[in-house]
Image (cartoon, rainbow, N blue to C red; front, side, top):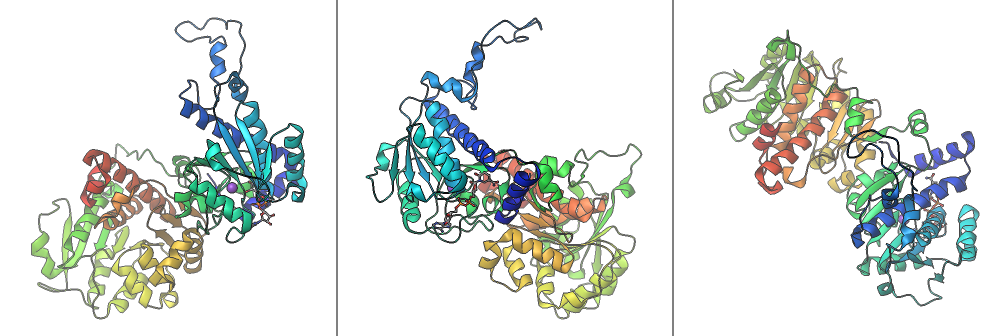
Length: 552
Ligand SMILES: NC(=O)C1=CN([C@@H]2O[C@H](COP(=O)(O)OP(=O)(O)OC[C@H]3O[C@@H](n4cnc5c(N)ncnc54)[C@H](O)[C@@H]3O)[C@@H](O)[C@H]2O)[C@H](O)CC1
Ligand SMILES: [K+]
């Protein structure tokens, strides 16, 4: 599923109108109708009336061939489906305020109001601006609503009591919104939020920055957002994702092929995207003739006395995700403490007996990397004298893909690594927001204020694959593509969860997935395993990093 910017959405809108010849008012009609259907579904679920959420309970009156035995001929009958079924009075008692802005978002709201009225739901139009100021398709919809006799109020002119409504459609501001809502818009948003009534937002919550997910004040806090055509970036990035409530994406006649050909590069990481766009073999099938050598060998350079567990977690995760062999290069003095902790793991001490990380150990690690399929660097590594030269030697010398995490990233952030020799094998960086901030030389707040935009720019600039961790992890490729993951939960914010992710991604790389595949599939599986672990533990807060490994 594509995730677009406001600018990309405007372009797709224009192309549909100009290249396909579909009039703008038809798109608006589809948009408004889709919004109305979702509100009708909400009303039906509140009233507890039976039938499918799309409001096609009337189909029960139709002949239903093949149900309850034998595929006989259909019995004659009438099919009353969609919102027409609702005129039978199921929405009694519902009264919705439709907040209408000046632009096309307001036009969508006016269309929805007509369909809601047809479905037996009382509506009152609440114009944020004098209705005479609407133009284009929105003005046409204003006239249609007036001709239908829909009651209308104008903010500032007419008395309004939000206690009189049972729900609110927010059609104030959409993708044409700029900056914080002003004047009547701001006051209506504040009143809607304070009303205690469920708010359904048309396209995006008014006040939300459609591109970054930042909330301008005031911003609508919606129960449901009916997003039109394609997900907007602001809906998948926090805090916007939190303000949008449940997001339903409804198509309005803009073909996805236009997004594909038009260079939309971000999408939601769904199973379809994994199988399709990323071409991942999600079945994980293994050849009957396979052996441990078939599934790759990860070399892990990680761990200190204080953080030996990080190495163990990464190594176990790599093994659990199915790679054939893992060798852990670790400081000599750490060896006695971890022998036998993971019997499947091979341990190779560096720096001599009782030794620790130092610049000279790079040569040992490089020797160990010969013939290996992946080198993973950083979990629990700590910092040491000469670490920048150490990492540079691995970067420039390892003839395999490189996954860099944790202190490996902190070393990179202080080094001028753009001037290091370019690598012929890919690099995956897996920063959390703080590490990303250090890498990019900005504040953590700046990273969080536009995660997708920043990740895409950084990955392209440095020619690396980036995994920007945090709620809705973003995977960005050097080729300019981005994937937003939605598996996982806040309980995964626990010590060692990142080390597990490094192990999973490295283990997938070792099995032959390319960098984008391994990063995206790894993040997706890590979140899914975290969800399973939360179920097994009966609460997300009880999940430990090791549980994520066991749930893989
Ligand atoms: N995507 C599509 O193809 C379709 C989108 N539809 C809907 O149209 C909106 C976008 O409409 P647009 O007219 O471009 O902009 P808005 O309605 O979001 O608002 C513009 C309007 O609001 C005023 N304004 C802007 N910022 C502020 C502010 N901070 N405070 C107060 N007022 C503000 C500005 O003056 C403009 O007049 C999209 O989201 C969809 O809902 C279509 O209907 C179907 C096709
Ligand atoms: K809106």
